[in-house]
Length: 297
Image (cartoon, rainbow, N blue to C red):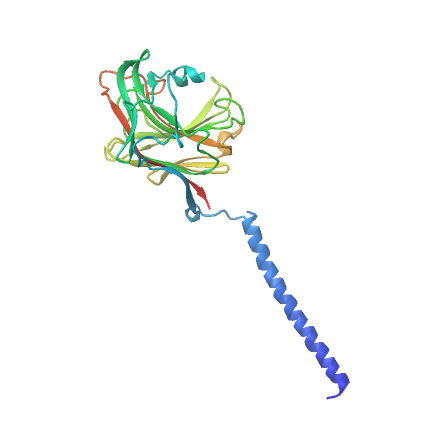
């Protein structure tokens, strides 16, 4: 072959190879860019909630012989010690840390409301929280519990803001994952509190009713929320029944994108359930199998 023709052919082959190589890199770059957009949340499609993967980040299975005070703190008294006489609801109990009112046995936390004269009150019970021991922003939060019943009985699993970014209650929010008023033993409520100071405060919520005459005192049920940025959804035994978003609270600020901690308590009396009467049997016990906190991978 003539040298000039050979050189020309060599240049053509080199040019063709360069074009193929450039095309290959461009295709790879396009794939990478698409993946980066997906990771950065720039795609228009939202992920299917059923595809979300959670990991367990905190839990209490109550497997020991006493309450784990590395995870929980007791709140004692009538609320006056916290500037909340009657715990802000005209409740009738005195909260204690006595084993008469709260203990762990056989893998179950027992919170017991009793009718008795104690420190000037006619009832005793218990209230615990994870404040500064377990504080989270977003996740799946759940409790498996069997609930008490009766006029004036008020068990709750709920959350309060750790940092009060928007100010005192209710401006920084309150998330009630589960509440039951004992004269409606087959109904639980999920609620948020927000907005201006009392009496201009606001709340929104919904309820979930067991069918077939069942009561929440009959067996354990799982009460949970799935909490992500700008949305909280409530569930009973995996069935969704209530959701809030910033649009739900408009025109009030949405305070639920900050850290919250957990509370479990069993109140007696108060503005919502009313006082016990002659139909109310004591003692009444809230049984908790576990509390778990999951967060997205």
